[in-house]
Amino acid sequence: MTNRMLLAVLCAAFMPQLAVAQQKEVIRESDPEERRQALVSLWDAPPGSLEARTGMSYALWLSAQPGASSAMLRDGVPVPTPGRWTSIGPRGLYMDNGFFGSLPQLDAGRVPTLAFHPTDRNVLYVGTSAGGLWKSTNEGASWMPLTDNQCSLVIGAVAVDPVNPEIVYAATGEQNESTQGCGVLRSTDGGASWTTLGQNVFTTSPTQSFAVYGMVIDRASAGTSNATTVMAATLRGIMRSTNSGQTWTVVTPALTFSDIAQHPTDPNIIYAARVGVSGSATPPGLWRSSDRGATWSTATNFTADSVGRMEIAVSRAQPGSVWIVAGRLDRRFGGLYRYDESSGTRTTLDATGLTAAPAVSGRNNFGEQSEYNLMIAVDPANANVIYTGGVRAYRSRNGGQTFTEMAPSIHVDWHVVLVDPNDSRRVLTGNDGGAFLSRDGGDSFESLNAGLATSLHYPGLSVHPTDPTGVLTGLQDNGTLIARNGLLQWNGVYGGDGAFTAINPDNPDIVYVSSQNGNMLRLQVSTGLERTITSGIDASERRAFIAPFVIDPQRSTRLYFGGSRVFRTS
Image (cartoon, rainbow, N blue to C red; front, top):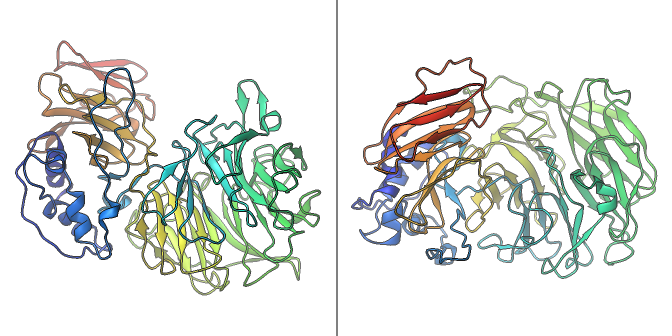
């Protein structure tokens, strides 16, 4: 089935249709075409039901999955009443991005940071790029937002106190898109309430602040609300607090540090990754502190201008070693390394599979955006098992000599990976499609996105002319979605970065969608017929990444497109 044939079915969310026959079978995640076919075959809710009028039968899809539970379902939302706001979702979405997404599993918005609870495997934390911090008490089956009323919904780092897990730190701002923050949030009651700390250090002016890229809670002093040492890697150096975040001191030069980690057995030793900056007099490299972050020195340097962003990992299985994945300044894969305390040397790992040409074009691809998506973790029980990734995710079982692609059915652009220190079979990850959990050491992954309202919406949302909950909207890296009648899980109709949209006010069967760089389509939703509508716009015309267009509300065949000039079609 082609993408456009599927589109005709997905677009039925705007046009109530009779359901098609059931086909109950286990869906193989490894086969993208089978996942697509499953979406069509599971489109079976009876006419007039909530799900039939909005598209995908989430209930039937769950019933076809092994281990599915009715507790995973989400209720619909009511039509908003005048004078108040009601969330209409999406709390999970079925995107239309082919093998770049997670069909038939649900995706959500970007997840740059995650945390396990130190003793309760059911408690998980997810920090998002646009929806704040969320907590689950049932291993991701459902979620509750924790920071909706705080100074920022952009969470770049989260850390749970290993001695008193009711103490949680959530740092605002995010390095993946250099988003500003507003300091560090701290909770002493498991996320029920928060205090904002460090504004005087993390905010450089009344209108300027910077993000926290990573955090460490010192194990040796953990468990207090007034005497714990906390450290943060930031754009302006390593920040350190000795009173549980109440006050902070800059303990390094004002350089950019992209990651920070504590030695797995000696809490006095802290490591941090100094980012490479073109033309900087200070080379990139791994920095080290032997006094719990009070003072710092260089452990190993890279050649100036050789690498950019780096992420680091440690493992109880091999204390004294630090694994480094580096991106180059041109955004490509820069190398995988291991620094060893015993010899004071750095080893370049072969990393075959990360450096080889893609086996399939666009698929087995580490990518060329390492300053945006980069991650690494090492199994705490077996240092030969290494997880890393960029656009795609990879796993090594031989200490980094060779890697094979991991999670080919899951969304691209990987930002974070954690291995449960109490159960190394559990691997928690975050990417541009949300949060995913493996319970078998990375062999398979389950979406944890049902209930997460964390999507990053670009400008250009359109409202359906007759349905108060009907929208057509574009999302960062999750395509263009449609929603009707309050269903919380939304359906994708077009891929890429979803951009501006329009619905014909006279005939909502006709919609207009776009993706990055001004790619525009006209869609007839009842048939799935499409045509491009960029004829006459010079391909070299300068335009924004999310280029605007708008429909004339009085003359529905007239649209305006904005680049360096304004274009009109009648």
